Length: 245
Image (cartoon, rainbow, N blue to C red; front, side, top):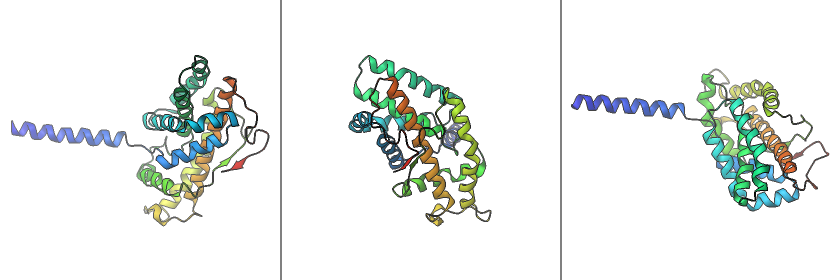
């Protein structure tokens, strides 16, 4: 009986370890998510900005939930969910649900975009898996020094279905991953992000990855707000090339 219990305990530990490893993920931490959402809100029209600023907690909660639950989903599955949210939000809003629900939906849309624009998410390369957690923490410590830029509404123009758009975005993923790995394995041996300075490729890649995520989320928010008959007057950089935040 004792031996059976020992075997059971070992099996339990093995299963728990496997699940912990399988479901560990590179998801942005609290300050990073808030910075990205703040940037998306800043890029919104005054009418949408006013609404989402009041209910920012619900927006952040929606994005955080998606980042946690859907990290391991395929890009195709995430795009399907994104398109469903995009199409359903105007319908839901027309039924006049609580403002909290609508704000949460905007957050979920942003969360799906953040996942689709994460170049470290879809690769299982051993070195990438090894540095994910450290890089997540690195971004969190540097988030207030990162300058996020807006690409503009036509650079590139948003496409629907979204899957085709985000497939094109993936063309630059390898370049970003290689830049990050170069910093972590300068001589083939892994080093800590504590050795990076703010001129490193890892710092620059973080700025570019988060900027793309914010730009794409802002584009989709703009389109869904139009579908909701929201006022788009005064939308920043609607007819200009871009901005920094």
